[in-house]
Length: 219
Image (cartoon, rainbow, N blue to C red; front, side, top):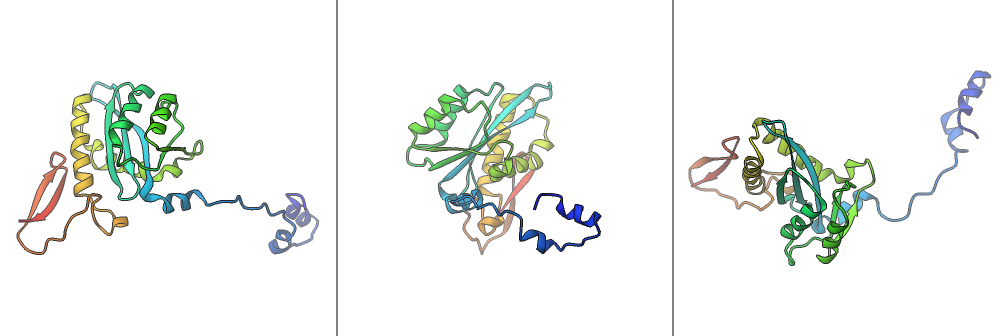
């Protein structure tokens, strides 16, 4: 039955139930293999994700921040800042982010042209399988997209960035806060690097990220 048949029948005074029409619609077979969501869930401990985002400075110049996130513990593995992102700049960042004994099995990224041949060559050399997402499908890299949103809401949007060195220092402070103090529901309200339970002592608030956030502990 061609598309639009229900409307054509209605105009002729014939009422058809949706269930009747559904019986004659061709059902396309599902693609074999696991879905993207299943892949991410099953291999979380072996997946890292990378992405770039833009930060304007007080002088209206644009800086680029590369973030690399580990899926398993939501750890912010690496963060780097540049005014000119190129494949030649990203490639050594991958080497710095992944020592030989800590390299993930897969790296999820978008299809930005900045991940050129030299980046792919470095990933192969580290034994990492390159997994670019489908074009115009940022939801496939949702963990790192959510991280970037958190960085903006919890840090960058509250500061005036003076330059590259200033942004690099701010991102270093936020990385420490994110990994050591920021809790995640997916981790049972634990931080990515883990925090031991403290039952005794006076509670203190330790300022972090220039006072934007605090880490609460007992002493």
